[in-house]
Length: 396
Image 1 (cartoon, rainbow, N blue to C red):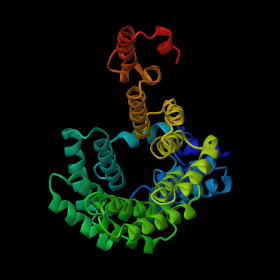
Image 2 (image 1 turned 180 degrees about the horizontal axis):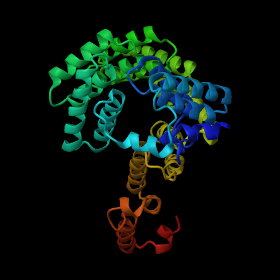
Image 3 (image 1 turned 30 degrees about the horizontal axis):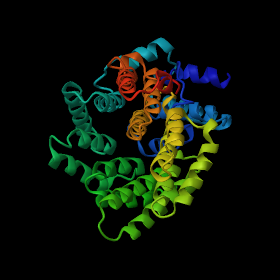
């Protein structure tokens, strides 16, 4: 049976109309999956192994993909000997049916409820996630992943219980990814505590680049608030991001973060990294492309004071239709550039930018008649007042 047929026979929902090539970095997910498979024994490991096989397939690592499938089959035969030869319809129905006696399914359901809350943040999903995570923790005391998620749910409602859960996680978990998520809880308010957690995780797995990346993020946070010792903190941030890039040379966000830190004292290093990443643009995912355009545009805008080049760069990023956080930031930057043009009486250029934003936004996301059109009316009135021709501001 060829690999595609094996993946379909495994009946994992992600193999159906699942396209990630422009969405995520497969190599990055393979790293996190390896940690999940190694440390998360209470979850449905065959699902993780099947996804690992699919990602290996995307990377062209066909032998590794087949090996992951073999391991998934062995676990299924061992843990579910009575229902291993599963049909697609029956498996799909089983996946949808809430079976409270099935610990694996209950754990997955709890994590799915948490994921729903992270997207909606409404009271109904909050209550559902809190209840299901609490239930699974009561049955699986060593489910440290669920404890981290419950702590995040309770961060504002019951800070004391949230920190008690995380203390248990930090003291007892040996999973670097779980510890990384625990560190994120403290990253903004108490970066030093997050640093200590990450350093412990690094001792457990020194090859996982995201631990070094998050460590750099913590030092960056400290740098913004530091009134003394900035040189030492900056050096620590640069070292952490350098290690992240060294351990995963394909990590675009680590490269961008390193460039930003270099920009504090050595902007020519910052520019060199940006130019190198720009040369890799055709092979990057859409989100990574947006991030590169955002950072390179910021360098041009804030460091080199080049409004025209910055506008061109921000436009290139905003024209990518996928709606990530970076796209909203690109829109904000374009509006800032338009404001600069307006202040210097380059009203035609400002109007062209607002028109560009309107043209590249989905109608359901554009909530007014369009700032570009509104601005044109303002500019028309201004031109009538100042005696300039309509052609001068329509030409852009």
